[in-house]
Every structure is written in structure tokens, then in C-alpha cells.
Image (cartoon, rainbow, N blue to C red; front, side):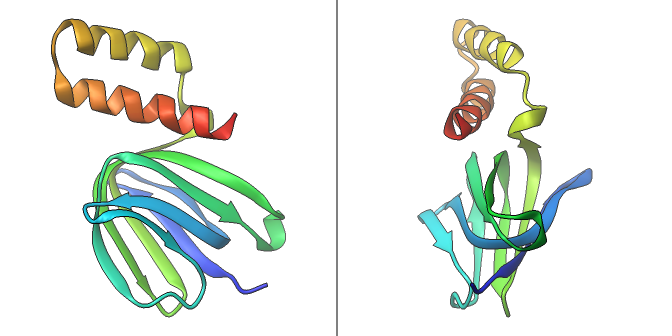
Length: 127
């Protein structure tokens, strides 16, 4: 099976790196799926879950991250996701995200509500 190399990097750290057969992300133009051999692209990441279908030595599986803004770039089977903020689902405290969502709604803080909502959608996508 063909693979592409994926690097998911946040402003402060490398979040995930490995081989994948498919990556789905939300861009300013809509959701996009990138597979090996995809046409080169450069786009703006929107807040949303990023789903990575892993392959290679780590075996087949799925990695999901909550991503908040950034850029996506693909060329020569190398996919780079450069995010302002990115959290793998196993790093997300669901109860804390739920409290943050309720607090953001009560304070009418649209940005905080969006961040908390993305975290919860990412966790839900894995279950």
C-alpha cells in the first residue's frame, strides 16, 4: 500500500510524525482528504479535527487531533500540518473541555466556544 509521510507540528512542539494512507483536515476551502500521490497543495487550516489513517511499522490505525488554525502543505508524498495549536485526543481532558464549553457559552466567548467544541468533536471522532 502506498504511504505518505506526515508531520503534525504545533507552534511549540512536534505533535505526531509517521506514515499514513489518508489524512482528512478542514481547510478554508472545505474538508480535504490527502492520499499518496495527491496533487501538490498549500492551504489554510481551519479549526477542526484532523484524522490520520496510519500505516507502516506502527500498523494500521487512526490518530485524531484537535487542530486550531495553521497551514497544510503537500508535495512529493510529504504532508506538513503546521498548526497554531494541536492536541492529540489522548491529551484532551474531556471533562475540562466540557466545562470550558459551558463557560464559553455563558460568557458568549465565540472563540473559546469554538476551541472547546473542536476538542470535543475530536474526542468523539475516536470513540
